Image (cartoon, rainbow, N blue to C red):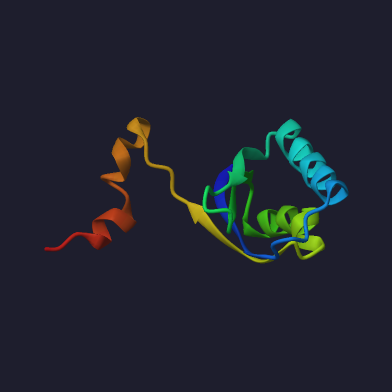
Length: 106
């Protein structure tokens, strides 16, 4: 499984009602129960939100995001998705990763 970071953007302030919020939360519950959501939540500045998803590929990540009522009903007008290369102890913080090596100044 790959990790995808999703930023929900272009929020339409003043357009959130309890029905839309309930449908969005149900979507998050389903993602969580399926093991597809790592974390989700709004930013403190109240302008954007973020999700981190476990998916097989970008197409699956897009499909899951576009099922979100917040996106379907344009509460957030747009989103960005990027695949995250996880750095951790197991992979020596990506020290041997080709992308890391390619970014080093020689």
